[in-house]
Length: 80
Image 1 (spheres, rainbow, N blue to C red):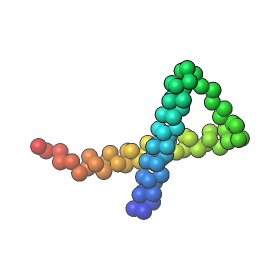
Image 2 (spheres, one colour):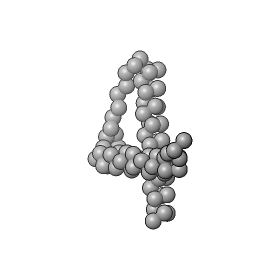
Image 3 (tube, rainbow, N blue to C red):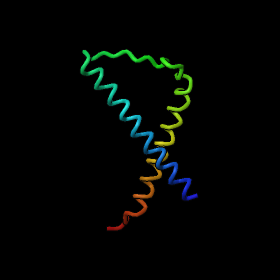
Image 4 (cartoon, rainbow, N blue to C red):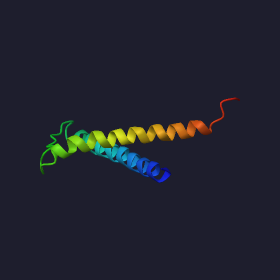
């Protein structure tokens, strides 16, 4: 079970980082090209797959952050 949780954490953190990088690159492209950008979400026929993959990876990422925060706050003493 511990190995599965570590795998989920790795995938979750990697997915959140990759989503952030894609969003930042999209922002930079729009910023430096007159504040406008056109995004073709089905150039290679991948739109239907992305409709499934993006929410799933975001959910795994959010769950990973939850697990990380839960483990971090468990180690912090509650009494000062």
